Image 1 (spheres, rainbow, N blue to C red):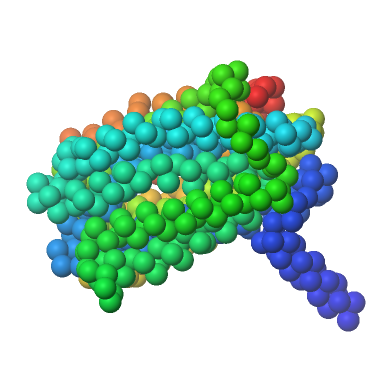
Image 2 (image 1 turned 90 degrees about the vertical axis):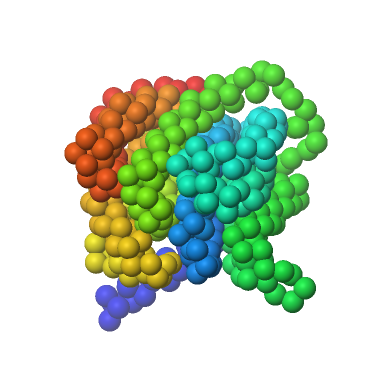
Amino acid sequence: MSQSTKTQGKLSSFFDLLVQSLKGNEVDLTSITIKRAIILLAIPMMLEMAMESVFALVDLYFVGHLENSSHAIQTVGLTESVLTIIYSLAIGLSMAATAVVARRIGEKNPEAASKAGMQTIVIAVLINIIITILGLIYARDILLLMGASKETADHGATFTRIMMGGSIIIVLLFLINGIFRGAGNAAIAMRSLWIANIANIILCPVFINGFGPVPAFGLTGAAIATTIGRGLGVSYQIYNLFNGRNALKISISHFIPDLKQIKAIIKVAAPAIFQFVIASCSWVFLAELVATTGGDEGSAGYQTALRLMMFFLLPAWGLSNAAATLVGQNLGAGHIDRAEKSVYQTMKYIFVFMAIVTVLFLTCGHLFAAFFTSDEKVIEIASRALKILSLGFVIYGMGMVLTSAFNGAGDTWTPTKINVFAFWLFQIPLAYLLAKHFEMGPTGVFIAIPTAEVGIAVAAFILFKKGKWKKTIV
């Protein structure tokens, strides 16, 4: 009886914690237990990242059932591969925002945290104007450069043009969520992605297949729906920035460029952006390598596998982001040992999550791929890719936590250096060697990916133990 009462008490306590995490009540994360702090951050962060991955999957599902679906799937996949460079900008800036805002919140200085967050937005808008213009003008050329056939490039140019033209919305969605995460309010970040995705799920079939007065735009409709959905998410973020109900109290004066503040942010953001650009450019090269060695079907299978992989890995990334916030806030509060313990505790949770994902991919990969396309050749290639990629998931997940810890501390150079070596000096040469020299085609590329990711995790653990990140000043 006492054991039953104790179990019920634990379940009740967890349920209360779950509700609190979803509501987003502000808590001093540097004073409660580490497990409680991780759960409060991780649940909304995992749900947030799951929603980010849904964008690509929703697009993939609807366009995968269009006529000439292989061209449509390839266009979505190759465009997403190019957009990962924009995601790199967004993620790099959001990492800097999270690190600086978290450090200021840990120091109990919300005014400085608010100003730092807004200065990051100023930087993002200025940079993104150039990207938007280039995307609008060179959409078709970008697809051709990625290895798409002329037919696919002609078919998907408008889709790419809209997605690239709306890149500022992508950047703001990532960046403002990074600001909220740094402040410890992950629930707002989560809700903005839910709003964006619900809108996308509703609008995708409307704009792709047509409904009432809305004509059927086909592939282009997916881009229209996704851009509108993300725009609604950003609108919700902006409302919460200015409503005065959060730790961050935003005023118009915070948007006036402060060169000293901007330099300090760029010092953290530049290597963070470079860090993800390195990884993204590697994925772009691998996508091109698969397209040239595996043709349209090989490319479509690879892109399907990547979208499925990211659907499961982004929640794990959300979990790792909890470590970034806790490291930043605890360093700001002077609790160095607590920052380190937070990382190790998060690694335990991600080990379990990634082990479950590995089993799912090894046993159900074919079923997952079949949900998005009826092309048997595409399904076979996607299934093979999922099985190979999943072999390194557990170690990859722990590497994500360690990378997030470095970034949360503001030590963005360490994971950047790791990425340069692992992706450009190891993964790309290995993929090229296996795919072309040993004539393994796409399978060689699949093998190179988990091999490099394991190397990243091992290197990150060694450097984390050395502890240089503890002395980083932001």
